[in-house]
Image (tube, rainbow, N blue to C red; front, side):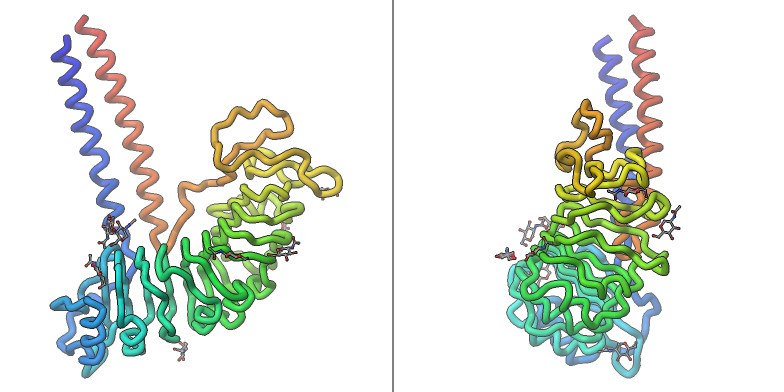
Length: 353
Ligand SMILES: *[C@@H]1O[C@H](CO)[C@@H](O)[C@H](O)[C@H]1NC(C)=O
Ligand SMILES: *[C@@H]1O[C@H](CO)[C@@H](O)[C@H](O)[C@H]1NC(C)=O
Ligand SMILES: *[C@@H]1O[C@H](CO)[C@@H](O)[C@H](O)[C@H]1NC(C)=O
Ligand SMILES: *[C@@H]1O[C@H](CO)[C@@H](O)[C@H](O)[C@H]1NC(C)=O
Ligand SMILES: *[C@@H]1O[C@H](CO)[C@@H](O)[C@H](O)[C@H]1NC(C)=O
Ligand SMILES: *[C@@H]1O[C@H](CO)[C@@H](O)[C@H](O)[C@H]1NC(C)=O
Ligand SMILES: *[C@@H]1O[C@H](CO)[C@@H](O)[C@H](O)[C@H]1NC(C)=O
Ligand SMILES: *[C@@H]1O[C@H](CO)[C@@H](O)[C@H](O)[C@H]1NC(C)=O
């Protein structure tokens, strides 16, 4: 009997390993850089090769190192010399020549720092289309960022922003499609320049932003992802349910002075905020955002706590969306298969008694 159960458990573990293998693979293949595939005979610009060397990135072939999770580079295919177009630096502890090296990357399009706790460079290449700083560069000045006029994607996570914040950063950045500045100590109201941007992705969560929530113009139908949770916004949520359900992800919980008009929005949307009274003030304290699955005994708090909507297919940094979807399906399927096997094992274990 004991042996039998052990066999069953071994079998189950094996099945789980097999099931979850695709999961880990799909994580590792989710690409965030676009490698230049065609092998070109022309060599890398010697000046840029030297700059890479100064950064400690003296790989044999810097033009085919597109791993998204490691120090990575990719190049264009120009002649007579190729140029670095994308650069990712991760887990760095010191980059003494960062400012100097960046000056050499005149056609850099994408620059990412992941867990690089080094001082910020004095200057960033104005050619950048995509800039990422994830727990990196210690602090970033609004002025430094505001000079990147060609950015379509900015992702700053867990890096304090110094200076006047969003109004300055966005003042001359008209092409922005994806804006993430989270856990960055931003304060004040949202600037109106935000609403003329062609945004598909807006994440300003976990800052200290205040004022009322923005009303997006009817033309901003491309918006897919809106995360404004854990700020200090107040007033009535100005969106109707067709606006909210059209989004892949909508989060506004963790704003204690925000409320929703229950004659416009159903409590079934589970926004994680309280209902409004007739003056547009929260009727009762909103459910705590960080204590999910609390029992909702209070009638006026018939919301779920986490304030997320369809969050399984949210989060699509750098075009990883489809992979996330595949992941979700994989996890669901795995769970179902696991359940069936578990039930089989149980029934077998019972049968042999
Ligand atoms: C990435 O580059 C930085 C800076 O040169 C270096 O400190 C770090 O060790 C490198 N990491 C890997 C995994 O090569
Ligand atoms: C960075 O460090 C983390 C934790 O030590 C590790 O999991 C990750 O693979 C490292 N990344 C690189 C590029 O070395
Ligand atoms: C960040 O980088 C440091 C230094 O390389 C490393 O010790 C640490 O484990 C990394 N942390 C993460 C979360 O990658
Ligand atoms: C920004 O993009 C435009 C059009 O792609 C280009 O002409 C211009 O040179 C770029 N600006 C910088 C500073 O690279
Ligand atoms: C956050 O901003 C406040 C002012 O708004 C400032 O006093 C504080 O030092 C900032 N914190 C960090 C970590 O930069
Ligand atoms: C928003 O916060 C700023 C400080 O960050 C404060 O000066 C301002 O009065 C606040 N506005 C509202 C409407 O609370
Ligand atoms: C919802 O709001 C949008 C504007 O945000 C408006 O265009 C649309 O007509 C509204 N839909 C309903 C059903 O009220
Ligand atoms: C809620 O919506 C109703 C119907 O549109 C409106 O009459 C009422 O004034 C709104 N209440 C608040 C507090 O905005």
